[in-house]
Image 1 (cartoon, one colour):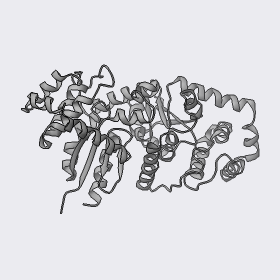
Image 2 (cartoon, each protein chain N blue to C red):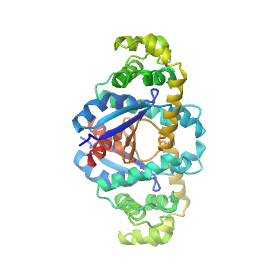
Image 3 (tube, each protein chain N blue to C red):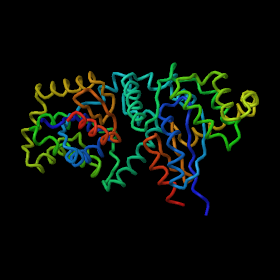
Length: 200
Length: 200
């Protein structure tokens, strides 16, 4: 019988995607669920509903609580945490490179980007940062950075973002099960994995 | 030593306040934490940031997910669930009456209102519904409905709402600890109780 599959939709700038990316491998492994990492551009979906930046910037009380909440969550998980500056980071380059990287290395690349951004406070919009991350994973950095600028990869990210919107994704992280069940937020990871397993 | 205290801020129209109201008594009891029920008008705070209805109505994809998520949560908790119609309910009368009711009966009254609204699909903006709830709790319904229309109670609700905003409350339910630590959302109830106990 095929293992259950969970689509993990996230944006590299998304704050709660950081603990989700760091937690998903061991939890999915224990649950026997395969995970597909699907980066997209949440900013495009926000723009369609009239937001020109993160709601955490637009609504300051909500933003203040998010930073404090994330700090508490990371402390409980023993995850280092640095607040990205600027916030949100421009996630376009990282998302394109993630789609250029071979699928078997995509999860490793994504984890390394989140670590650079939220544990080390590095700027993920800079080719030097992304190049160093690729080199650290023994992936050809020059080739990937070049691929990220091709129409094929640009179109691939556009179509992934359009697909996320079509599926009802409105925030990140979002966990989608093959039966269409949608779970939003790092807090829902465990429930999403349990749901994926129901059909398994 | 005094028992730790948690302020439980909620709006009677708030969807995730329903599971929180139903869960808080046994969980707080087990944690040895005293809880103050503090109803306020979230709509006033929403209006100040430019929203004229619930964000779940303003952002349809977010709203669709909220209803499905709440349905799943209630099923897991074995809580009956009916989607209120209209949504959001006007919570003004219920909030005023909650402040008129003697403090020792306030939590019982609040639970009964949420049950009427989310388990039985009754309209909580109608004096008949609120009167029947009061009578069912052996509280003088006529006296409470009259008190709810006095300036003293109207001002009390205004000042509670202003206090919520001053404290940084931007959504419901919100759990506030005496040291100023703020936890937002039904998902954070357990963490808020653990935090309250740290100082205890």
